[in-house]
Image (cartoon, rainbow, N blue to C red; front, side, top):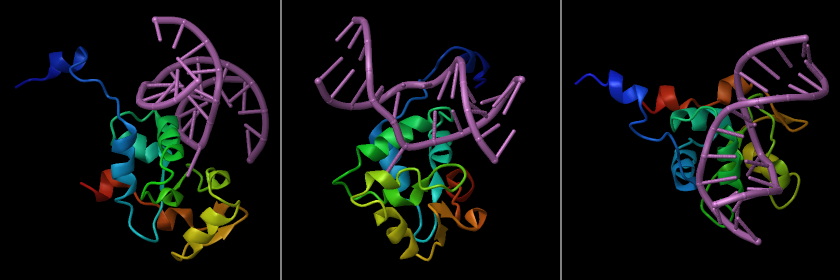
Length: 119
DNA sequence: CTCTTGACTGAGG
DNA sequence: GCCTCAGCCAAGA
């Protein structure tokens, strides 16, 4: 069917819940990272990247590899929310990622694109 | 119901 | 590269 009309009107809200974010984060391969923006875009709301960050804040005590999510330039913007200021960096380094001054080196080589690689 | 809080991002200057 | 502004919206108080 033609969904032209249904797209013009809101056929479905492009919202997502914390659980949706966590589901995607758990798919990030070991030794790779992704960004808040990519997750938001994958979930159909590319401008809601900040919601992804809030979801990460709520992921404490859960089995979520939140350390594999960084901001668009490879900066460990969420490092402060781990137990110690260096916990996030140490987790990433344990997976082979090189970090200098809170910034991932060779970011383009380790970033994981859900839209491309998750089909 | 209202209001605040953000681990963000893209555009414009 | 820097800074500011506005859009985005779930969750909790």
